[in-house]
Length: 175
Image (cartoon, rainbow, N blue to C red; front, side, top):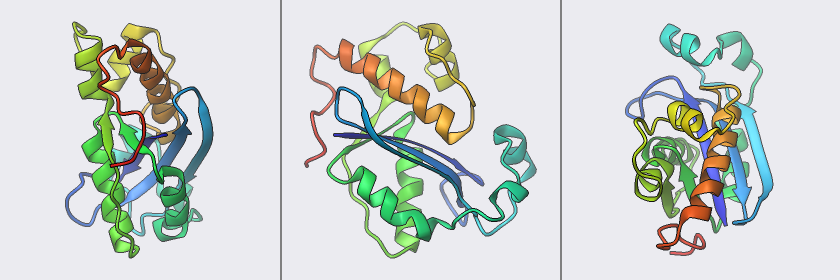
């Protein structure tokens, strides 16, 4: 099992920054079998740079749930799964921080599609999600929005699974 994730945030991982959006796709190695998406109220103003990058405004998140409300969904969708993201340290550590504030510990095996792409499909000029998807012909609708970026990462992950002759991608989320 795999859980392919993308988040949008109010800034970097460190400090009081919060999530503004999350998208998760549970994948059985063949196809997506469950998913979850939500805007999140960060409880603070979204900085102008982030508003410009993501298009997510304070008004859009005003009536959205806070992270603690959706923590059970995050835990359920990622349970027993490898946590997969493009630049996984960012998404994983942000969710771990938010879950910690909500009173939950979070341990998952992780897989970074940036590092795995560099190994399995070498030679591309850039491994940023947008540029790599463009190079590979993977549609990316809603760039810098969790749902669009996570959906593109699902397609990239499926391509990596097809190219993984070396067994770099773990088969399940058990430790």
